[in-house]
Image 1: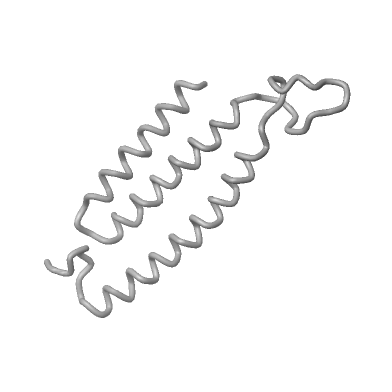
Image 2: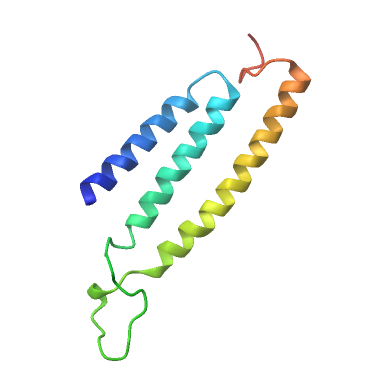
Length: 110
């Protein structure tokens, strides 16, 4: 499971970097989104990969290795919402810049 998650994070990061280096603004925005998804997966994986484990310690069992850390889950959920809002803002700014300049290149030239 860890290998699949590490490969997914690597593919998302590599794809995001490739798209950020492209000359069009829409590709840059999608690249930033892919990198933010890779960071979210990385933060989520830091909370320990456990299946069917409760996130809260009960009174009977105090072994922390049997539980999942809920903090990375909350951080990733917040980051997903903020990332979605920032992507929507970037798209609106991109459309406005395209209307002003007449091109969608990052440097403003064809």
